[in-house]
Amino acid sequence: MSVTSPRVSFDDTAAAFSFRDDRELSRMYWLFWLMNLGWLTHLAKYLIPVVIRLHLPVRKWIYDTLYKQFCGGETLEHVMQTADRLAHAGMHIILDYGVEGKETEEVFEHTCAEYVRMITYATRKPNIPFIAVKMTGLARTQLLEKLHERQNLTESEKAEWQRACQRLERIVQEATKHHIGVMVDAEESWIQSPIDACVMQLMQSYNRQKPVLFQTYQLYRTDRLEVLKSHILEAKEKAFVLGAKLVRGAYLEKERKRAVEKGYPSPVHANKNRTDEDYNEAIQYCLAHLQDVCCCIATHNEKSCQLAIQLMEEKQIAPDHPHVYFSQLYGMSDHISFNLSRHGYRVCKYLPYGPLEDVIPYLMRRAQENTSVAGQTSRELRLIQQEITRRKMLHQQGVY
Ligand SMILES: Cc1cc2nc3c(=O)[nH]c(=O)nc-3n(C[C@H](O)[C@H](O)[C@H](O)COP(=O)(O)OP(=O)(O)OC[C@H]3O[C@@H](n4cnc5c(N)ncnc54)[C@H](O)[C@@H]3O)c2cc1C
Image (tube, rainbow, N blue to C red):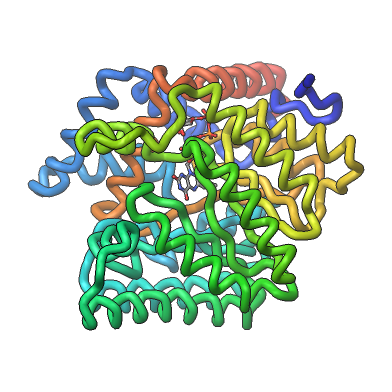
């Protein structure tokens, strides 16, 4: 199947970087150039968490480079400035509280309250239709693992799990009231099944009229395509709309390492081609069942986006169909986001915020994804370079 849309080209760098000034573009160029050095990124993955913990005086440098590229601000108030800039450029947002790895009931309550506060902020900004939620922000990872393994829980653990699900329900209730969507992130495979079960249960109550709650499907997992299809069928039978965010998956190395260590078959595909095939089939399947599913095509992969565009054109699905969203992470693949948006597609930037110290795992995943080995940076670098050159020419002609 050919995957080139005659209408949407991702090569328009003027549209892609319209909301970046020259200084920002130059900062981006150097950052992506550095991340392109695989060895440096590999080293940084180990060094940065240590230097942050030791309070070495590099915080400002990390803030001005990696943090500014991939995060919107350290507080909700601060991230609203980035949200406004994106609004000005016509871009929608999935707002994400990026804090990871905190594990007490007090913190879970605080995180839940923060998610509710995010909804309040989102209602004031027409360009924030969604917030993202991480279940590990609301429940202990060890508890999720125990549930996933179907181990017997103590009475106190049962109550703990009930409280975690109630927190998610509180968020969804608030979101429903204010017409904001909630996208629950997918995490490691060994904690995912209780998350899926809780989300599916709530979808049956809250996704009756329209999709409020979204599950995330990691198509690098060998079983997810079938799970997605069965969930769409379940939604049809039980008369609710499935919210489905489609991603390839962010924990490839961790998944493989644990499978080897514990001696079970790897839950992720053996190669990238198989992941791509399942991802593209998931798009195809969702677009063929739009009465039962609202999908968010969350990817930086140009071919997958072009495939979606082509299928939408063939099936005469309007670009702004309320059940089709595209999404890319803030700081990545603006050439896809802004060019899709320019052609009338519904596009959201996934925008995390939170104190620098607490978003380090997220930043490290982004840096890792942007090494030359991962293949993204050369594309980002080429596009940034192209835009810098274009602007220089316009400056010389006195146009810009
Ligand atoms: C809006 C948004 C939300 C996201 N939310 C989540 C989330 O909730 N949970 C989550 O886990 N991730 C999430 N991600 C990250 C996502 O899973 C990917 O890590 C990232 O987007 C890169 O995949 P891609 O499709 O953009 O790009 P591509 O470059 O096409 O694909 C890279 C991905 O392919 C897969 N891959 C690479 N090599 C192999 C191999 N040898 N074998 C098998 N598979 C391979 C990996 O998943 C890798 O991340 C999100 C991404 C976006 C854009």
